[in-house]
Amino acid sequence: MPQSVNEHNDMPSGQQDKRPAARALSLRGMLRKNPGDLIFENVTRFFAFVVLSLVFLMVYEMSVQSWPSIRHFGFQFITSSEWDPVNDIYGALPFIYGTLFSSLGALLFAVPLSVGVAIFLSEIAPGWLEQPLSMLVELLAAIPSIVYGLFGIFVMVPWLQTDVQPFLIEEFGWMPLFEGAPYGFGMLAAILILTIMVLPIITSISRDVMRSIPDTQREAAMALGATRWEAIRIVLTGAKSGILSASLLGLGRAVGETMAVTMVIGNSADISLSVLNPAHTMASVLANEFAEATSQLYISSLIEIALLLFVMTLILNAIARAIVWRITRRFGATAA
Amino acid sequence: MYDIMQQSLKENDIPRIQETLESVSGATDAARAPRMEALGLNAWYGKTQALFNVTLSIPRNKVLAIIGPSGCGKSTFLRSLNRMHEEVGGSIGGSILLDGEDIMDRDPVFLRRKVGMVFQKPNPFPTMTVAQNVVAGLKLNGMRDRKELARIAEENLKRVALWDEVKDVLHKPGSSLSGGQQQRLCIARTLAVEPEVILMDEPASALDPISTMKIEELIDELKKKYTIVIVTHNMQQAARISDFTAFFYMGKLIEVDKTAKIFTKPTHRQTEDYVTGSFG
Image (cartoon, rainbow over all chains, first blue to last red; front, side, top):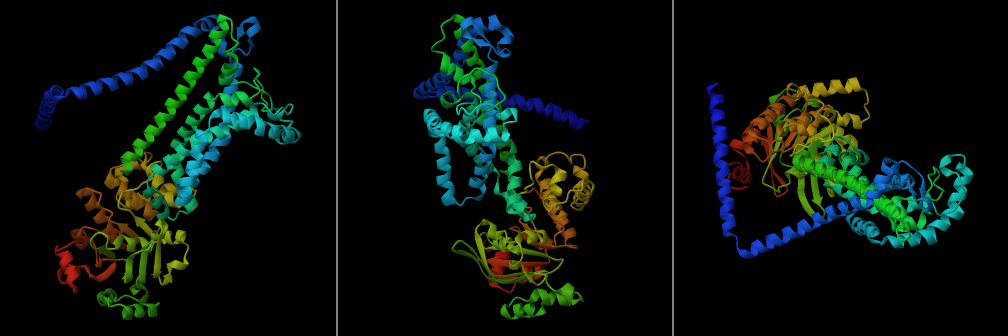
């Protein structure tokens, strides 16, 4: 009992001792700072502030400008599928649907493919192959999206139209997913082009996450009599949440991708289960219609879509970053 | 079997382990035969040779400590015994016998179930719970029976004297334990696969003194059932826990003998210099 009293007495006094000391130190540091440092510090502080205010400015402007549409349609804006500029009626559901359908569809193909490539790069490929292959994958991310769009229009769409879609219709036409006519342009083209476009980001982040898992983990598995594949599976369980966040970042990319999608998706504000039908995404409708938007409400509705898209990607990215941050912290703590 | 032993006697001048064993215990041939033997073992990292013609017997149910300065090849030797050395791009020449059979003829995956390994840094799987960590090896081998797995987890946690400390946190991640607990968890994980030999690569060097003591007590307990080879930087540790000690220097085995002899009157000058602290 006396001991605990002592401890209680010691603790606060120890803290009190520390605080003024720390303050004095920083105060002395401030006084001693030379003018060059002071200027440099404030200039960089200003730049950081500029970035921050840009984000807020954008949100503010979008909110203000979409206010007429928000007030006019309310919540119905995102539940109504009627998009009729002639009569000034706007519902964004077809675009939200198209965005989710195309992005999730792209993830369905891209995640297994990317994880496979990442496993090869991180666990299997010898150094001389790994380097150039990694570079090639990352190069895919550097190709401008208009180039993907052109590739889509001139190579992929004709191929889909003459070979893939007739086959799908004939074999699986009884499923709603593959109902319709072989246009070439449409959801399937958008999904495939997005798959290629999100592949690099998912691959390179998954690879980095897998590499961040210390070799002691692989050795632990091997020493227990794991085969190479089983050791990789252990690595994969460790990298699971990292791969998830890589996928979310890929999803964020797919959701916001505009040019290439606009060029191949067929641009039609319909909600359809079939991947063969033309569709629209939030990004593609903006790219397509902002120039012809004349009425105040039309413009306001497009800006509201932009705001929704902005918030959507922001949330996806925030979640993904948070997961990556948690992983690096965990392995930093246990394996350092 | 015996031929090889005789051969190793002739080939190298280090047969004292067997002699001592025979003089100490009136055991049968089978019990006297070494658990593992390295015969003319050479090992390389790429083109750099790390081990030179090492011939060494590893006696059954004893603790063999391997000491020597950094870079002397002691870890390489240890990692050759379960063929982990080859996994990091190393290569091996000569032969290593486990119960008289050359391990080079065996699938390394099966070999490692017989020859378990504990590493310098505790390396539990952070995505698995404490209980899952213990049975990770068995799960790899295809065991699925949940009750049986739970029983084995408990049994092995008790064997490493960790059960009382973790029985309430079995479902927390393995990495949530303290360093010393993690290392005992890793030993439990190794034991769960039921190996015959346990290789330990400086298992206590990352731990505090109390955890180190617990690991040492555990090693003493484990040698009743297992053959243990432990690499250590800590000569007091080698003196405390081992029955035999091998001194490596510059990739060569300089001397192996009963631990007491190595630390009191070693045959070789280099050994004496090392254990008395003149170098290394």
